[in-house]
Every structure is written in C-alpha cells, then in structure tokens.
Amino acid sequence: MKLFGYNGRILRVNLTNRTTSVETPDEKFYRTYLGGAGFVAYYLTKELKPDVDPLSPDNKLIFAAGPLTGIPLSGSGRHCIGAKSPLGNQIAKSEIGGFWGAEFMHAGYDAIVFDGKADKPVYLWIKDGEVQIKDASHLWGKPTKETQETLRAELGDNRIRVASIGPAGENLVRFACVINDLTEAAGRGGTGAVMGSKNLKAIAVRGTKPPAIAKPDELSQFRQWLTDNSLLWSGMHEFGTGFAMESYVTIGNTPIRNFRDGEFPNIKDITAITLKNTIRVGMEGCYGCIVRCKKIVKVDEPGMQIDPAYGGPEYEGLAALGNTCGVDNLKAICKANERCNAYSLDCISTGVSIAFAMECYEAGLLTSKDTGGIDLRFGNKEAMLQAVELIARREGIGDLLAEGVKASAEKIGKGSEKFAMHVKGLEVPMHDPRCKAGLGLGYIVNPHGADHCANLMDTNYAAPSPNLDELHPFGILEPLPPTEISPKKVQMMHYYRLGRLLGDCLVLCLFTPWRISQFPEMVKVVTGWDTGMVEMFKCTERMLALAQIFDIKQGLNPGADDLPDRFFTGRVGGPAAAKKVDREKLNKARDYYFRLMGWDAKGVPTPETLEALDIAWATTK
Image (cartoon, rainbow, N blue to C red; front, side, top):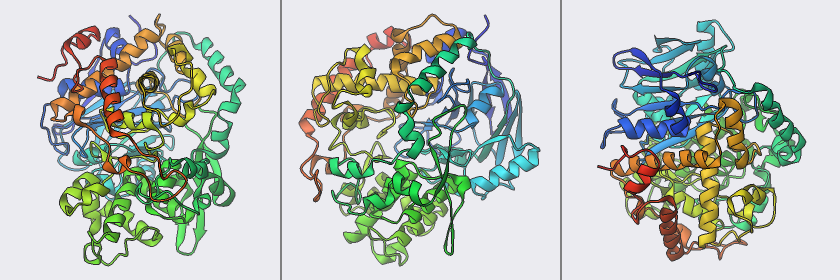
C-alpha cells in the first residue's frame, strides 16, 4: 500500500561498524507512532537497556521527522531529536526548526537511529537516499558556522543543510545541543553531548524528492486560513518572542537573578522591542513559513562583534543570559547567544547554570579561587561572557558548570542544592510556576523534565481569548485564574498538553497559530487517513506512556518528582513577591493528572492503559 506523507524508510546507522541499513515499516507503524517525539519514545523504550551511560556508545541518538515535516505549509520545517539525557538519565526530546528537517524528508527518510561510536570523528552525508559515513577529523574543534561552510564547499552544494555540534558537544558539555542552519537549536536535554560522545560531528542532507501528499490541493485551505487570521501571528512577525518581558516582570513570570528576585528596573533595555529598535537588522523564517519570527542581530564595533549568520536570541535566550543572570546589557546578551549557537550550547541551561554559579559565588560557596579570579556576581556581563566560553571549552569553573546545575550542586555541596533550579536534572526554562500553576504541574509530570514548549501557559487562559477558544472542542469553556491548581485546571493542562505534544509528533511549530482541532484535518489531507481527534490524542497518550516507562526503566521515580524548593516561597521584592506554589495542592494535582492518564499513584502506566494504547509490550519489568 502506498504511503502518503512518509517515505516509508527508517535509516539505521551503526557508527562503530560504519554500516548503514534501512527499515521499511508498514502503515500500521506510522499510524501508531506518527513521527517526531512518537518515534523517539518508541525506539528508546523498545531498544535501550536500563542503566546505559548516556555518554557511552550504548546510548541511541534519534533524528525523527513527521508527516507534516517538509510539506508546503507554515510551521512544517521541524523535526525532533532524542536520546537518553546525560543531565538526569531521563528521556530527552527536543524539537528544532529551520530547513534541515524538510531537506531530510525530501532526501528520502523519515528518521535516523544512530548506534555505537565511531573510532574517530565522522559526519553523515545523505543525498536523495544515498548515504555515506565520511571522515570529519578536519571539522573537529570548529564552530557550527565554519563546519557548515566547510561541508558545503567540500560537497559542492550551497543548498546543503547541516545539523552539527560545536566545541561544547565535542567536549561533552551535558547540556550541549544540536544546531542546524546556525540559528536553530534542539536545545533541551543534552542531545549535542550524546552526538559528541559518538564522535558524530554533523549530518549533511540534500533532498529533491518530497513524499507524496494524498490531497495536495486541499492544503490551500489551511494556507488561506493563516492568511485570513494574520492578526494571530502579526506580533510574532514584528518582534519574535520576548516583546512582553516588561509585563512578565509585573506578573512574576520571568526569572530574575536565578529565580530569586522580583525586581529588574532595566528590563525594558533587553526586550525584543528594544532589540528591534537598536541592533536587529532583519527577520527570517523557517521552511515554508510566512510568520518569519526569527531575529537577525548584527553588531560591529570594537570589542563587540556579533555575526548575523547566527541569528538572534529568542525570549529564552534574552531572559536566561539576561535577567536570570542579572545582566541588562543587550549587546552582551546577544553576543552570549551567538556563542551558544556557535558552540552548540543550550542557551537556557547555560544561563541558568551561570546564574546558579553567581548565586553560589555571592553566598560564598564558590570563591575567586574556584572561578579563576572571575568576579562571578549577578549583573557582571563580562563574567557572564567569560563563563560561556569556559563552559564550552570545559576549562576552569566551566568544567564544573558543564555538568549542569544538578550535578554541580552535588559536587559543591554546602547547601548549594537550594540554588539548583532543575526538574529531573533539566534546568528550568524562563517561565516561573509561581505565577502559572498549571505550568508548574507540567514541569513535574513531563517525562523529560522542566519543559515549557508543550506546557500550559496559564496566563493565556485567564480570560476569554482565541487561546481559550482553541480548547472549546475539549469541553474547556471557561477561563481560570493563572495561580489556580484545581481539577478543572488539571483538565485544562491535560488537554492542552496532549494537543501540543501531538504537534511534536507530527512535527509542527508552536509559534504558528494553528488550532489543535486542525491537526487531524491536516493529517487527513497529507496521509489520506480517515482519522480524527480521538485517534490523534491516543497517539500522544501512547508517546507519553512510552516516555514514562522509559524513565521508570532507567531508575527514575516520577511519583516523587517535585519543583525546586524556591518555588514554594515568594520572590524577594517586586509586584509579584507574594506569589508562590502550594506544595499540597501541587501534589494533589499531580495525583489527579496521573489518574487522568490511566497511570497509578506512582506515575506508572497501568497494564490496562498499555493494552488500550496497543503497547502491551512496553512494561517496566
């Protein structure tokens, strides 16, 4: 039977033996796991043994597209990268935009599963189905831009798309990420470190044969809908993320000085609005997308050059390298973000790790001897920039911080654990659960840890709005206060999260205003399947159950997951100082969420749930 929307080919690469093979799953496999995060959860849970060292050859690294990847529709330029995380031994999955995913699908494959470790640096070259493992010794040590330029010249095609790691991935920084198109990061969970541990420098792709679409003419209805509803995305086009940072301080959303404080008078100096009015030189977009929300920053002055090839910071970068570290210098923040893209560092974990060290330094838990003489205080932009360099090279204090805040705190001791802002070892992103109760619940029940992308942003559902309208088909009809954590809020978070994680399986961008109810219609048009929301949500529940089982098999205890203690107290000063998470209510909400998912009180999917999801093979035994 002919597949639409897929190539019907999964590439297996054994780096130890330098061999490749191709699997050709049937339609049932694709309809069961969809793609993206679904493929990641399937292969890791099915094939990875317990107690595998994440940085050993036994870990697997997976690049997975989905049925919407590379179709001519806004938001379709994404793919998912997954592995066992070197930060907390949990499942790592991170979506990434740009052009690489579409090019990969057009090159003839739906996913790559990497096994083993090459004996020396290599890169993978894929062109319209043909695959070669090639020497990358000459690329080792190069930043991502030089890697991309070298490969395009070497392979004789400037249209080649490159996913690579920089020095941070090579040096096994545990929160290193994978970068493609120089500006896009699969940031969370340390997949870049796993890539480096396998001596895999890059994957270069070139494709000219996209999969067939079942009803290509019907795609136009979605494109017209997006055009007709341009007000839903015009703000993203004008500013990108980060234009609301001043209001974020007011409500207590954006972290200040390692999530400790509530006041940051100069926040207006580092917002996306200020960036647009000062050093932004343009906006770009991902494959096939009309939103074009990607900032381009350029600075060319003595002592401060910022290469526009590396784009510009999203809100997460502005806040993590800015107010989280107490830094209010926009150019310094953008320079740090540029270096993160060049070195393949997750800007969120980088900023939170530096902020952790700054608080330890100010509390006397780290000294100038530990920092190599760096005055690592909040607000010191030079110290922040130095720390980024040291982390990427694993030198001095950077060698400690490259372990992530969980492991760094364990090594420092002396009570530093209270400054380590993480869930499951994954550093907390730039949204504070003290003002968004559903978000906090999402942090602790996510199998991959503190993630904001497929999580409820409670403030978007506190009043009637197009955001709330999106949830009407699921029976969520009334707005709820952001700090409420009632059963109704848990249901709101549950349905929203199923929808957004469905987007991670398909794989579709969060920053396009598609409604969750449109996803099954898109799948119908692309694949030709007679499907609907029930089947699609079942795919998401299946993915979540597999990811949960993966974590349990790797020794984690989901029922014991908690937020950092800091969130159960108020901030120091500011308009939102009194807001805090209620631990008892959070625990009750977690228990209720587990019941909604068909999991037991410890967060283990029940045998009945696994049977209903057609994954009875996936047990914790």
